Length: 146
Image 1: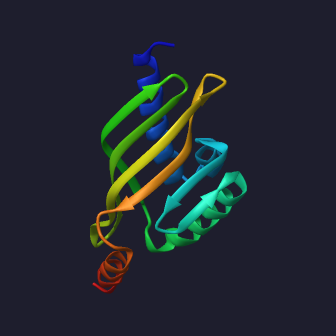
Image 2: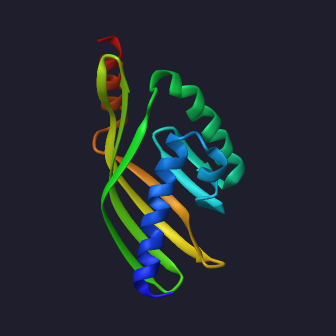
């Protein structure tokens, strides 16, 4: 596989992450990670497929407050060295309801990826908010009351 093909595969993985979690296809979402993959997010740290499955269950419960959640990743920068890669992307998570569209989260993802059996997967996906979690929680509470 050429470097261009690897880059396209990583872009596809990042898109698949968004489409599967937003589409509630949690098995496919978990498959974006290596078996010992790590997700660091506003909901804590999840290590391995078992903990990622628990994260997905908690996320599904939280969807009551954020119907139509959408993850948007932009400005994706990738560096590849052999079977390892790093990527950084900006992230915005929105939700919509009859009142309109609300931004739930802005920040970036810092990713470490590995290519295993010809497939790129996340070794670690670290969500870094633009604001402190206390500020984000207060903002979300204010948005929910409006």
